[in-house]
Image 1 (tube, rainbow, N blue to C red):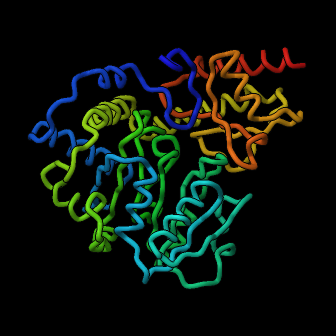
Image 2 (image 1 turned 90 degrees about the vertical axis):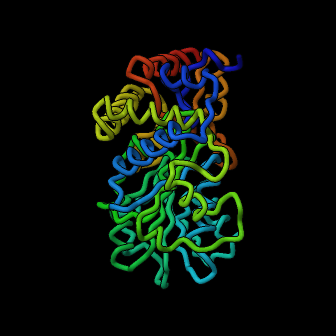
Image 3 (image 1 turned 180 degrees about the vertical axis):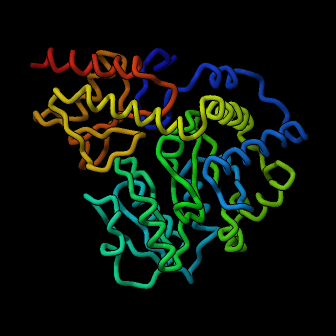
Length: 358
């Protein structure tokens, strides 16, 4: 099978554990019964606990990509009366800008760079906003924002706070109560290390009260919440991925909880960054997450060519960038089922590559 024996360092999909892979190989079971409802309830309660969600929060399970989660949140929680401050630090921030434009939500395209927005109080536009939307980790460039500073800003200015945590959940800290977050979007194929196809929207009581009637069948949050009361979804869920999610959440708890998961990602990120210091590569951002390292060649090499050569020569997949950053950066994930020995495969390949290219 294509790429079956490759080492995977892309930020989604990421390397899955053998336990998770085995579940993906079984016959998909019937799901309109109490047994599957129990799976849904378990996943909901575990996610709420890991996020330290406020009492009374709920989780919606969508059989869809992360972008669908982003769009569904804007559709169900914001409208033409809102004015959203949208943090735009790259491709995924731009996606939120585009979503707001499509759905006629008034918004400010808040373009930022070289800041984690710990200085949001002085950087924010002098305008009245009703909500703030941010991709906690702007995966296109490997840049993480200060969710606590943003949360404090939202609290002081009474803003509804929406966070896309798709590429930092279980690798970097997020705490809904501590950081005053109202809505969190999570997807299956990044930190959770599952196949793509399942997105979760976590809604605080404040978010639940804000849900409006929408002219949409598939992404109607009220319908999902009604069905969720019995552990079901209105339409066919990603049944097998839900079973994998249950196992993955059990793994996290067994291994010491969300804090241990974050510590592991931090260790791998720091280990990799220290190991490659002698190479002509530098960090692209001063605010990198544990989830990923973004690198820029300092010797004039094309980043895209390095990505191609690692795949062709070493069967290692790291992540390229498109557009104007195509030859400037490449990205290395620290998410999924990996350890230092797995990271060493990439480190050794990079040293070998540069030695042969010298």
